[in-house]
Image 1 (cartoon, rainbow, N blue to C red):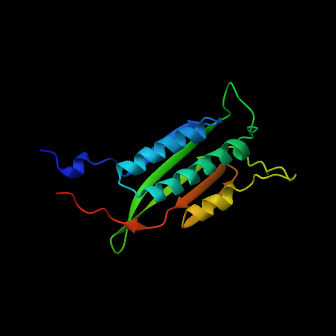
Image 2: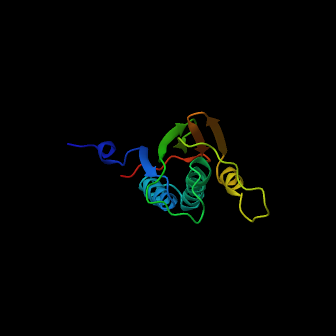
Image 3: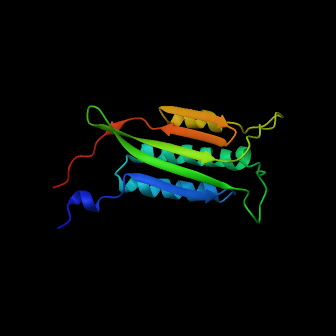
Length: 154
């Protein structure tokens, strides 16, 4: 007989996306479904969905150099997304997301624009956000605000 634990959704998440402009929407949908399956509060889901969308968009545009209005028949690479729900002391839990690309970082245009808000948005929507650039690509790590563990269902 399977226990409730055996039937719960996986606490880990891992998927890869082709680096094109459909990637942010796919990432948003996957993250939203995963968080909702774990009874994550709606406001926190929205913050993490917005953050993952910004991180994946940055990978497409700055990691792989795909123009905002560009469509590519062959995406230039993959974006990996990994997620984990981590238990914290005191009956709390949080989400840790890693967004990894293997592109070469392209600095944003310096002209006047209403864009370039992605890093600020990710910082505002998470407790911690880090970006690491290496010769192999860029890794963004997003750590959500801690939330209480769900109450056991009887």
